[in-house]
Image (cartoon, rainbow, N blue to C red):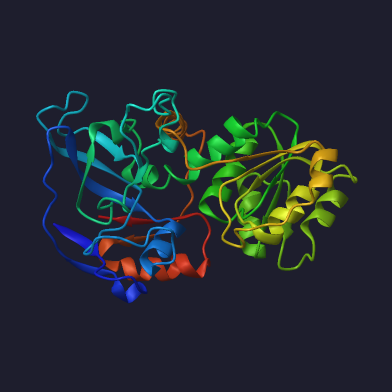
Length: 348
């Protein structure tokens, strides 16, 4: 099969488009013919060897997000058949285990106690074919395109988990959404608008903020032009602050976002590229009765729910640019530049 292969950690030049052996499936596995691939910033860290996963077996195929059709099923597979339109699930779990409390059985398969990750501990979606167990497959709605599906799994399922499941955004609430030009951020704007919130979006350029307005943001803040997000938010809310913050930046942006919350405010976070270790003022934290939660992707049930909403047109993935799989180097360069709005997707 054709695939993007890395033989060592490095830059975009180390992404090699070549022929490699197609994975051979076991009795409980399926082989998926990938049609579209979604890119994630995590891919850059993994390629460069600066993530927490530094012991990859080389050669390796990256990619944790994609969509396609089942090309082959193992002898023990009963849930799927050849030709089914599916997505491999990025957090690969056992489905059930011998732990006293099984997170998968409780619907939290995104934080399985025996957690693995597609494209990390196994070959990923930067290829014509990928294999996964039948427990790690998501069925696609019939009228959903492969491109929209590939742009949905991480961004929209994560945004839905944060906005609806964790932050429990209600109609009429003020919601601050940071990094509104990112995949998760642009998705969160749509999800919060669907929930009936008043949205204050932040981003690093006026162009990205204009796109956020088009998606439903009511107020915008350019954090490259504003010294302190909290001050701007307090001014926009008459000194009260926002009910909720959807945060994925970390560092000083997280600190300012906590200050921007009103009494009983809620913040949920899923990223920290601007600073992984953050000093908090715990006096302010408990006096304001702040609730803070975190999110690590989303379970299969949330993915299925969101895919259905995209198929119905309730949510619309924002695809910034598409590339052929063979041009993965250019796609990674664009991803690293952050000079785009939404999601980068590749056609296989």
